[in-house]
Length: 116
Length: 111
Image (tube, rainbow over all chains, first blue to last red; front, side, top):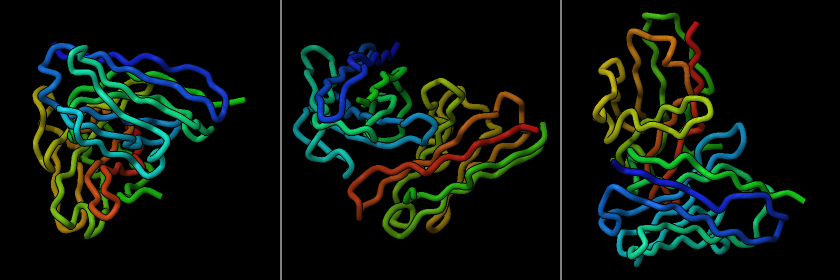
């Protein structure tokens, strides 16, 4: 059974950093791209970032490029999202999802709140 | 403003048919990129409803169907049921943005 479990969310001040993790199980992790999608409170879904199975190729939404870094540790079956220079508008539930698009498997999400 | 435009809301009575549109442009849907549809119930993660324009993943009732034409796509729900009340999102790829994009979402109300 495929499972994706996010962690690392919390309350941080503007300008701070946070690292999210997504522990994956139930599939051959390094064979699949992985993606972060976020959802601000009461708002729609927003694609954030995608990484290839090898970790060599990464892709970012314009709203986070230069501030967020996606990475993965295939030996630990874990996906990461390093978030720097956080802004109030980054407040959202962050989901990890399996694949580059057409996400069949999602985690339950972790809430990131950026507020002073 | 989302690159993919969806109506903010649609409604229908139980048993009726509703259509949710997703309008894009020549840089996304019109360029031939696949459209996917998701259903999101309150407080839960999205669920993949339609992949690759018209394919239903295992377990999705055949009351849900997807289509694509030109720069637009549609999700049709027939035999509307109370449990279909949810938010629905379309997704595709936009080559001018080099980004995967979602529609703004459509809230379906079952009257």
